[in-house]
Image 1 (tube, rainbow, N blue to C red):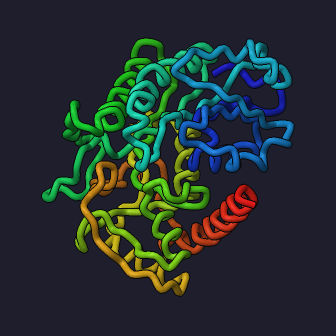
Image 2 (image 1 turned 180 degrees about the vertical axis):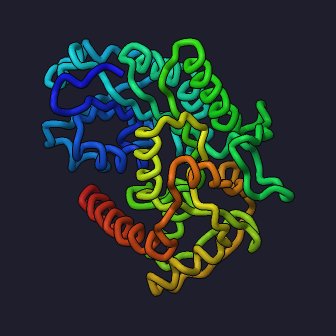
Length: 342
């Protein structure tokens, strides 16, 4: 890593206007200079609006399937990138909307190939640490005889399925990261995320928790895409950010599972949301969606023993925080839509 010659590190967050990326920017900006890069394929400017006036923050709109030369961006002159370079890169650049998954197939495939290659080249050029965000989907569907899965499991993914742009794409991205480690000695770390929830998740985009909250606020049916036995795990966003910062500061390269290892019935989650909101909604069941299927649970042994991390936010507390944020977000959206119609 290039020596920091000024008072703060320069850090690049790709996909920084997204749900997880924006929370990461919030934490990193406390002690660093942050370059947030996004093309808004699924990110949202509202997630970073509060950071735009901070002199240590800069937003760049760019599609990472195209190469990027940070030295040629006028807005970054204040960070003196040409002298100090970039010390850390966090890569979250990949579309994540279940509702628009089919529309984003090519964009997703490119994010997991050309974009990660360009990110790795930036890490190589600047001798920067890289934290690459992968996904539990690389393990394939949940195995009934092995509900908790460790990082050593090679998984089973259909490379030609309708989900392959994301599932196999995430596997290929890990392959590319690992080979840049071997060939170019890039200091890269791989995080395999399981289901994450929290404030700033998009409403009505096919995500389980925010869709439950949105419907409960409107006293509409909460739809579980599966049956009453559909279970999953849910990790609150602040726990994920904590794990990420612990990993970047460690000598561990991963891959490392980050998520909750507590299995929860999805119907129970829906009912908790109804109860918190005192909603009149009912829970109904529909056929599984392409991007809403049972996933394995993480074996967290490596995270606990090597990273000293485990999730600490309870589901009740996390849901309450998420409800408070999304209720405000939904109200703001309603005001904007009413203003457009008037």
